[in-house]
Image (cartoon, rainbow, N blue to C red; front, side, top):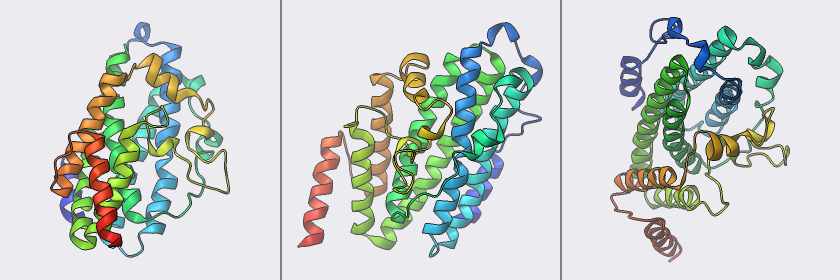
Length: 277
């Protein structure tokens, strides 16, 4: 089982709202309403770990080890929402999310294959690590800069945990797992849709279409693109770093070297041919 070891690793790195966030260092003159509104959107987005957890538990009834790990992942992701809300409660109370705004992002996701979902969230953690690091640089107020730094480190650790489960899936499921990871990997690094792909901006429920992405249920559904492009300026150079990180880490899982998305596409096609022959 992976859960006992991963629990200890995450527990050793855990930070406290009371002791590790320098609340007394708040500098009001360095905090703007524009920045506070982005914090609100991030808080609500983090709250969507709730329906994601419900999805993970529903779609992994065969895997108690992974389901136990999700209890820790869920705790830490909900703490991200909580610390952002606490920041707003203290310094921008008028912008703190309402319970209704939080509840709006809780809806049932359609069932999906476990390995594809695992890869999707692995990529999401890598991308979110980069986004939060850039957010820490963009913000000018020291307390929120610290908070985004703490969250970025959490997301990086979560990505490493998902990698462990991916390696185990390859051991258990062989080429079926390899193909699932390669297919989602191509989707997540190719940017064919002209935007960075993340679990919160993908369609996940036919019943709720077109309001079937987490982002579509935010108070400002267009917020993410503006945040990435105009505010934290997560440009093509930053996005390329994310793509390279996904390809490198996926290569480690699969025992391959992927220099580009084209390499991954060729690998996927070879697997598809092998599995149908």
